Length: 279
Ligand SMILES: C[S@@+](CC[C@H](N)C(=O)[O-])C[C@H]1O[C@@H](n2cnc3c(N)ncnc32)[C@H](O)[C@@H]1O
Ligand SMILES: [Zn+2]
Image (cartoon, rainbow, N blue to C red; front, side):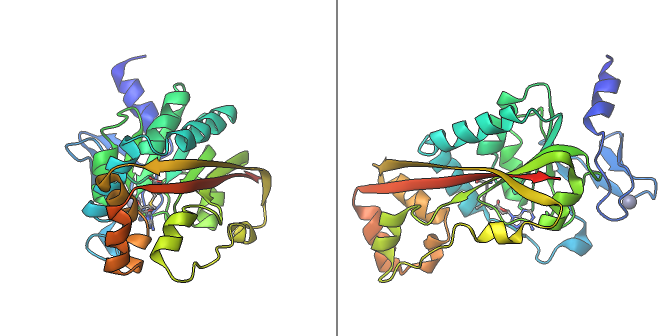
């Protein structure tokens, strides 16, 4: 295969977020038949977020959240979660897959490692996140885009990943091939319980099956499992990062947050994985 053919293969399936025409590569730009053009950033990622689809100047997670998450995840605290996610993804053996709301790419890169022969795509609406993510795995096509307009053709993916992220279910369904599925990873009601007890007088109960009610017609739950363990968060930096990467970072009072950061923390990590199949 020539280099040119390899480049073309890489873009099979990317579509224009404005008119849904097929995108092809022209120099450093991606262009559709209607001549909508999108630049590839110096770092290698593509920006497919059309100005008219942005609700704010800098949508998605901001730099501080992205940096906190990157430091915490690179500290290995959630390594067992990523390991199981990647194992599950590999077991479904997709040809083409997409991580929706990839953040700074910690989980995405581990999925890619387990799927060396597959074409991987990953997107997030936060440019700061994608800018960092794309350094982790250059073989993935990293894209700044909205999950409300996935830049991939109908029925083009055998696997979608959604990790701690919101999801547009109808869009997800559109890009899934029949018998393909969505691998969702999210918290159970016990996740970070001890932390929440320190932060709030009353810990809000969390319905960890709520997302199952959102599964649209034409998709069904194929498999669920949970993974739980106790995590010791030993350093102040790691405790501050854990707070900053979750909604607790801004919901709880400053005093309570400071108290959490000051003392050693032992906390339950409890996650569920759901595999939701396109029928
Ligand atoms: C809690 S983070 C999870 C990131 C990553 N999957 C992880 O677990 O490390 C949620 C991510 O969803 C992204 N996000 C929020 N709304 C989005 C949208 N409409 N389209 C694409 N990404 C979005 C945020 O920018 C953020 O990076
Ligand atoms: Zn177009």
